[in-house]
Image (cartoon, rainbow, N blue to C red; front, side):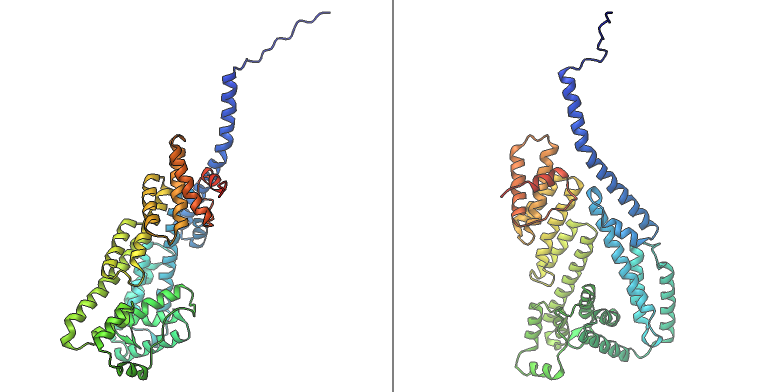
Length: 412
């Protein structure tokens, strides 16, 4: 018996169709993991925002710190807000918990300032800052009305306790005594320092965890001070020397103690110190909020007063180019990122590997999104990446897998 031939009912595929199918499968395999990773990062960022909104700060901070990709920079800003809020509330609450014999109008006024700072970050944050602020204001009014203990005696007491805390390297405790003193009387001479300068230093040292290796010099004894005065050095020269050595607290104290005939020259230096510190504080605040251009201008203004001043404003101004360049890279503005990163790499070698990595990454990203056509752009990118790799820079996982692959495969 003969059977009829079996007909092939499958559609015939042309060579071009087969190639398209293969290309589609390959592209899908390449893109899906990246899309999945992006989706996961988006979900993590959304969850962190929800926890932040609902005042679950511990969970929110942990989640923000893990966010990568497009929202990485924004997540860092949220982490900074959370830390600043916690610190402001902790400091303010610590003042309000003081014993009755250690609390006065100045201390409560400082707590009020901290509660207001916390409210600026998140008005409905944990710990009910609005209610805490109202209680602090009410207590402040009571203390002002009935009068606290003798102000002069209080200042001496706070200064003495701050100095003891410094000697024992308890910088958080020193901050809690020196800062209210500075808030009430900034130029109060505590030891051989000014209260405002001491407060600033203690705050910074407290943030570092109270390390005993910090370079805060305890005040010299009166005997040492008298020996210093007996060397024949003029008071003006000592004040200028303190200014030149960036010891602004001591310089301010010495300038304010100069005789009336020296007041014009002293006032000039005191203005320099005040304006310098104002510009530096403004620059730090702008930097933390991501306003890099404005921060750079403020740092430059400080550098114009004293280029080698405390905090190194010239280097900080350059650093703003690096910070802005990295921020622009993650925002997808690769042209602007490259311009800022090139400016930083040209003028500074402090963080050269980091700058060259993101400079190369910005150029390589442009090469990919423009269709892989500019071979010279690709080579420039690889040259920058090679500089970073030769310096031992370790790339993170928050950049494109294609860029990371190119970086890891570099040979030198």
